[in-house]
Amino acid sequence: MKSVALICFGKLKTPGFEAAVGEFSKRLQRYVDFKTYELKPLPVEQKSDAVRARVTGKESAMVLELIESKAFQASHGRNITIACLDESGKPLTTVDWSKKLEAEFDQGKTPVFLIGSGLGLGDELLKRASLKIGFGAQTFSHELARLVLVEQLYRATSYIEGHPYHNEG
Image 1 (cartoon, rainbow, N blue to C red):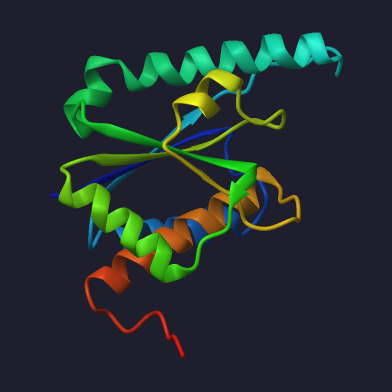
Image 2 (tube, helix red, strand yellow):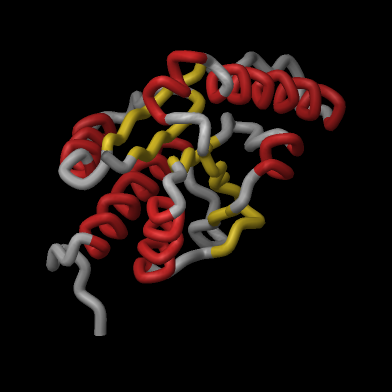
């Protein structure tokens, strides 16, 4: 079965978000083996550039350690592609999402989506990403970005499978 992973920092705490993300995750499971990995964000004692770089560097190492772990590779294989949510990323239409996902699946790859902590993602992860995705010029909370991402993954995979969830035109 096709596999998709989401690695993010922090838990869903805002009322209603856990239920909404859970609903779209359940729907997504119809089409792919979908797993979410929640990592604990590191504390930020001050918001200087040096501290930001150190913290995002350590958080990047946490993500890479997870991706390279035997347990992760047992679930998703070694042939992964990294897609980062980033403010510099390109917004995609549903059809673009579905084409990119389908191309990864056709190559036997597992797309791994990353949502950084409140400081974003470290440079090392952004350099390794084959795809940087943005949701437009607005800044979203990490919880809202997670909900939008999971809904878009469901929308794109259901589109690939010919389900009428997405209406275009």
